[in-house]
Amino acid sequence: MSVEPEQEDVSIFEDRLWHHKGWEARVIKNEDDDGWAVSMTQDGQSEPALVGPWTMGRDKKNPKPLDVSAFNTLVKTAHEVIRRHEQHLAAMLHQAIQIDVHGLRVTVALDIEPDEENPTATLSATAADGSQLAQVRARPDYRLTRAAAQQWADAGYPRASED
Image (cartoon, rainbow, N blue to C red; front, top):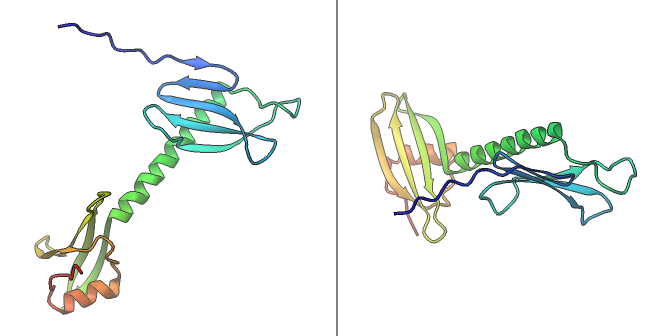
């Protein structure tokens, strides 16, 4: 049994390309105008997490070289973009609304399980004490609104139609 040594993260520090600690910053020609842009790509990803304008150098033709301060700022910004994207995705896949049903506080939740071929969704109602009142399958494109949740609860939590 042969054991291959782990590859070390090779750092590159060039004027237009930095690769360090799992991130690649690449200064590229902006196709829309005469300026420059910078893309930030995390190792293992095919698409950049961030693409933005880049500063021109003193000659007003070539880009300013990357430096440690700019690279660190770009990494921080790219992390923030990824975090916001993940939060947005989580908010799209899990929604919850609180309503009053017969004087009790009920949380109606829609949980979507993404799948390119067959996404599924579950609509559930939970009492304030944590007990589950209902759980049914729903269409993944079901739109959870306060009115829809109230209507579902007022009707006695019927099985959602999946037509």
